[in-house]
Image 1 (tube, rainbow, N blue to C red):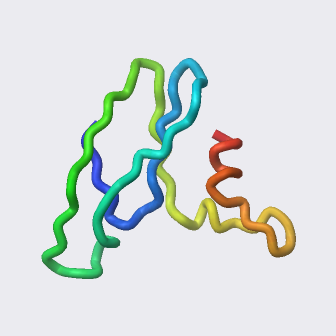
Image 2 (cartoon, rainbow, N blue to C red):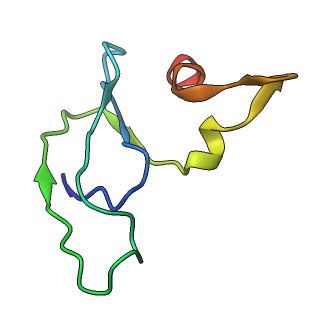
Length: 79
């Protein structure tokens, strides 16, 4: 997989054997900040049966209870 960050939350690499979930860290400014910004590309291997979960920051900013954010831990537990 070849990818770039662009200011988005890091995608999650979910191994097919249900091992440990990893965040695929990206680099670079958020898209649209500078017209000529560079977005470095990164690569990772994805084993057969694995999945990559792409999501927006709105997913982790959901409130599960009054004043309590779901956060990245909630998303990882759900994945």
